[in-house]
Image (cartoon, rainbow, N blue to C red):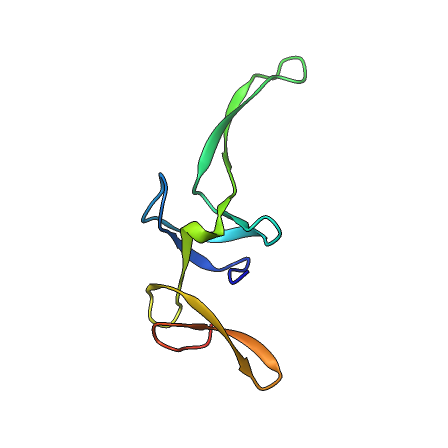
Length: 101
């Protein structure tokens, strides 16, 4: 997967289209990511202890990695990401400005 935890991404499809956020968790096996503050659902919890009240919690849900694009730290655009060899290391690069990410 070309997206990693901590990357800033822009959502390209869905109810949060056009919004940007930071990746909290990456799930490469499922091909999904969790973005901070986006794709939220409301979960209602019951009171578990006496005197506690029920509440509504907003939780971020995973979304497919194909729906987002990485925001290049160099050119500040939503771009496609490629891989290339930099000596013995495999590095990601921006396909728009050719800068290493």
